[in-house]
Amino acid sequence: MRTLKVTSLLTIVLLPLCASHFIILTPPPLGNNINNEDQSPCGGFSPSSSDNITDFHVGGDAVGLTSLHAQSYFAYRALLGTSLSAPNWTVLIPTVEEFGLNSFCQPALTIPPSWVGSAGLLQVVQDAEDGVHYQCMHVNFVAGTGTPQSACSNSSGVSAQYADDPTFDTMEGNGSSASPTPSSSQPSSSATQATSPSVSSAASPTMRPMVAAAGLLAGVLAALFAA
Image (cartoon, rainbow, N blue to C red; front, side):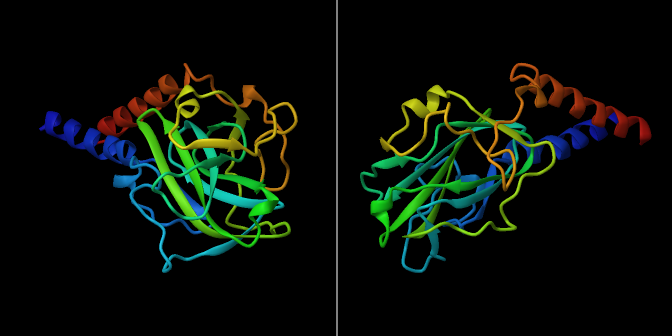
């Protein structure tokens, strides 16, 4: 009976972790299906005229998401037009390494000004311990600067820094870059202030899996002894 209880408890605890990736909050995504997020370029979805198409300001606008990994890398790219047959993505900012679960916001992503008046796609790509995941948003590029949204904020304990990820260096469809150099700009550590978080505010990459595993084991043992 105790063996069955242990097996059932481990299944309940570990199964959601294996299925979790990230969820786009704003702008509205083409769709959210965790089972298909590993399908390039848009997580198994294609743009259409029936999408919830919103305006995205080229002078700076927000992309908000929920990350279900304690540490992962994010690439932010954009496409002029909606054809996915041979996409030529523009890199918007350098690769971001994000630490912490739940909400993470990039409040002011900029787009090439020449795109104003055209439709296109935004793409967020996550590289985590269980693989690469994709999400896209169908938008109209408009002039001006966007208004901060309540849906774009950072959860307590979330931090980020620019970092290199070899996976993204060879990602299909990489074209031109509209991103600033890491020395001139840093990823957002709050929804309203783009400053570089302290690296010491998060566990080192080599320690993070050990910390997560220790916490998970402690929770399982506590539940067993309480049973």
